[in-house]
Length: 330
Image 1 (cartoon, rainbow, N blue to C red):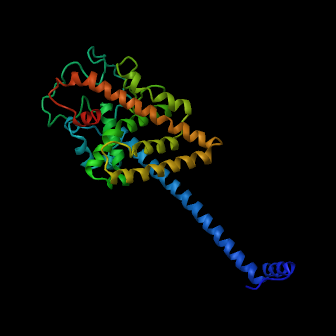
Image 2: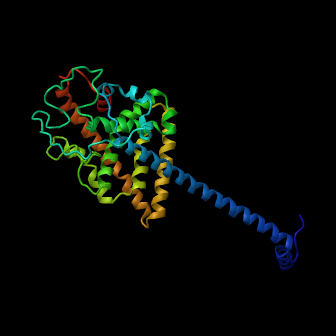
Image 3: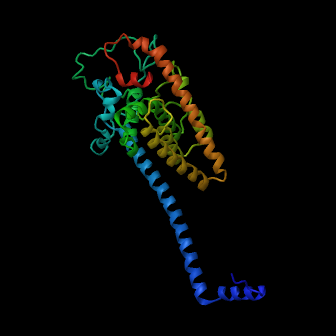
């Protein structure tokens, strides 16, 4: 191998090559390609985050429209199983057809039942003359918010592309374990966004009220949202993360893989959002993710209340709200 005997001369030759017009053009092109590639990656990441937030914003709009809509479920709908709710058509299209519910806000006071101490669970069996033709419960503009909110949360989950990639068994397992968490987060954010520290529903009623048996549990997710002053985009991304839980027992490996990728995507977008909008981005992200254990604990307490307090009362009723039982006993 030939070796340059004069090191300074070799350096001079190399320096001369660096200063040659052709070398400068080549380096300029390579640098520009590297920069363009970097810019493309950054823009793609920004576009992905932007598209995700826009999708969730649109979905949230439709979800809130459905809750405000002049649409009420018939009692037979509440007797469907979780599988039947998953496979039925999505009622979001009604938002473009029906107007808002009339007669809201509602202010009719209700007596507190002595046995259940929950206004949504009457002490006496509801009188239903004809279950097939019974229009709504109990009046046209009064929604049974516990059931209605759970049903609309299931509709929310069904709109995600990843959800449609799961088979019915995995869809059912997922729904039974995340519905309450997503519903509680949605309800709490709705109240907080209205600057209200109560379990406020779209019709202006409190459900539950502070004198009801289940109020302490149903209201426990209000405090962390108020404390961290959660913003709408943060809330929407956090709810999507709650929906995508790959650790649920009973999910297939195929479903776990799909859901894991989806959760990672939403987590990345939330982290990026925190970094871009907060000086304390990492700690803000950790604070938001820290709300999830509260929601999980809240769900566990709600299921305990249902099993040990509500189920013995409604077991005497001739008709069962099947999807409620499916979720509460999962």
